[in-house]
Amino acid sequence: MIKKPLDLSHEFLAEVLDANSTALDATMGNGHDTIFLARLAKDVYAFDIQEEAVMQTKKRLQEAGLTNVQLILDGHEHLDRYLDSINAAIFNLGYLPKTDKSITTKPATTLQALQKALDCLQIGGRVALMVYHGHRGGAEEKDAVLTFVKSLPQTQYSTMLYQPLNQINTPPFLIMIEKLK
Ligand SMILES: C[S@@+](CC[C@H](N)C(=O)[O-])C[C@H]1O[C@@H](n2cnc3c(N)ncnc32)[C@H](O)[C@@H]1O
Image (cartoon, rainbow, N blue to C red; front, side, top):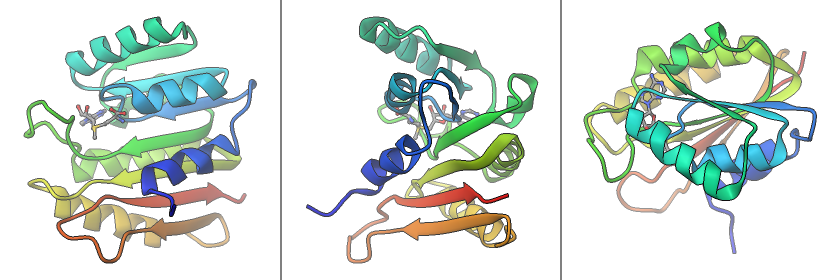
């Protein structure tokens, strides 16, 4: 079966993660991506602005017996206060399913965090952005992220878009970035 964007995002990052690497989950939410990264990397830094997300992820990590994650209750736009080198990062934009839909990622802070993640990214490192954009403010964030990624110099970054073309409503899509030098 054809790969879903979220599955491809994980495969894309898994290729650059190993027992020596550091990964960033910029939007921890319920911790699904955090757990995926923690199984592959040496260290993971996971951010969210909602205490509920941190509690939920902490519980999942404990159940999975994973102890290599720093759970950070702070905006991803401050990630440079906590880390300076990563091999891979994932952003899962939008709101936390089944909670307050008004607490979403926002264009300005998402772009700040993305720029900081790229600044910390090792050569050969990768960033995956899952762009959910059906909610209020989602279209503006989608446009801001696409404009930002399209403006990255092609000599320094390779970028790709993976998107369903015939699905109704506003299906999420995947942006992939690799740092070349
Ligand atoms: C789509 S959900 C993430 C889903 C998550 N990756 C998972 O596996 O469950 C987006 C998350 O981003 C969080 N968020 C919003 N603004 C943020 C910010 N400035 N910094 C970090 N997280 C933020 C929300 O609280 C929400 O939990």
